[in-house]
Image 1 (tube, rainbow, N blue to C red):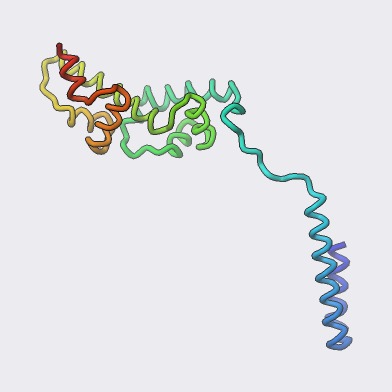
Image 2 (cartoon, rainbow, N blue to C red):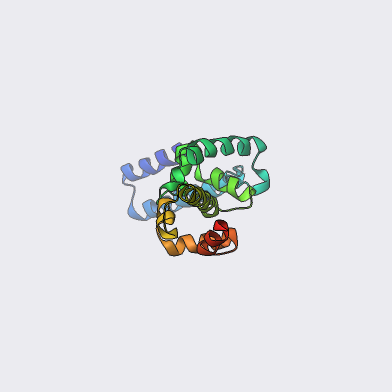
Length: 175
């Protein structure tokens, strides 16, 4: 039908039948094309992509992402990079940003909370190693070694996770 209308428009244009007839014909063709397109849009099935909710994230997807995070992020200590983004992490583990975000959401955490939790655990391990070897090291030095870009970000994250400041925790850990 569209091809027939295009051929009709070409025929009217090439015949040079007069300006008034030409204008009426093009307006008629435009109306027919618009009606056809409106009808076609109405008869198409819904082409939208359904957005999955947290509950829709399949168990197999969760089971696949968790080992990949352990292998590529935790064991490889990728979290020590202070500029690692959700998109970069998703690309590294071989999934997309949406699935990874849904995985964290299904765990009840955010990407930042996940990364900060790993960094804080790394901080605790470094601190315990320093105490065991009788090295003097500051919380700020350990925070930077744990992947935090700033000490203030570290302090806020540590207090959120541990319920106390890092220096308070260090004092309690020594006794």
